[in-house]
Picture 1 (cartoon, rainbow, N blue to C red):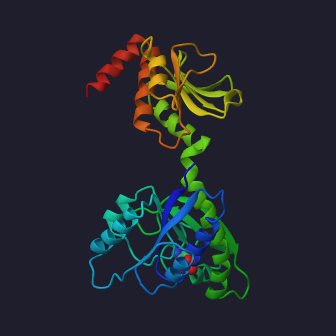
Picture 2 (picture 1 turned 45 degrees about the horizontal axis):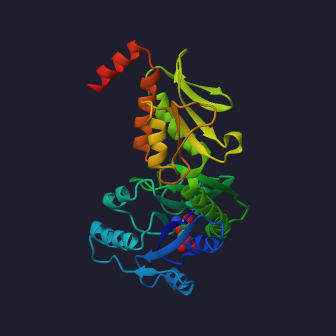
Picture 3 (picture 1 turned 180 degrees about the horizontal axis):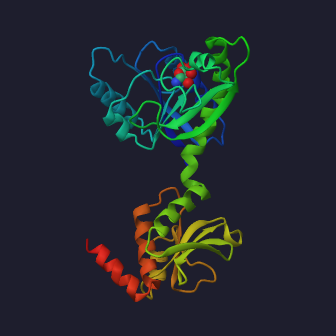
Length: 316
Ligand code: GRF
């Protein structure tokens, strides 16, 4: 599987960037750093990244409007074919345009146990509050500062006599480990069975009268007290495949689909000719298509009365 391309944005020393970069040197790391960019051409982290053979970009934001500067960074990221952005000590508020352009694909590391202590001076604030633990969080970046969904955290004990600096130094050790691991999980989440099942589940259970049971060891979606319209299969009979099985809508459809895209579609063992397997583990799943297939499959098994209701809903 190709490695996910990550761009890292920094403003200073870049130790978290270095942690990501060195973690990425492992053969089995699922991401690679393709660009390190800074809003300060003298940021020490840039020199480190360059010495490690990574492309760098440094330009001061001074005198520029926020959105205009962000557009320059955005263009650099796109030119480097970046798919995910990791903020690592990037001391700039981002424009709404930039945040929405990278929605769901941009992470940040923050030195507190969010939602506690957003913003600056996190270490001193944790000490002053008498907390037993401070720590660090990796979160998805949204429009509000330090506010997006938290993906992972590491608590770090506050020691008697800790100053903001001694505490920060210890938290930094935790940051370096947490960021690399969380980024690796994040870029592979669309291949993880739990994530894929949740995605199928959300669409399947949104259909009228749908419920979920386990059948033949597989999560299975059907009409309440009625027929089943989808199975989620994960390494069933040791086939190593993650897929959703849905009903076909015409007699020759199974063969036609397999012929058109034999990597994606397959004939599920023991299911007969009126079901089709759609692989979800290829990394390029068209979820709109999967949703249409689930809907069509639901229609194949839904009682007439429900179909009528669905037709009325569809008309709006
Ligand atoms: C780290 O403490 C990070 O949590 C915060 O800014 C600091 C950056 O340090 N967002 P470095 O540049 O990664 O060494």
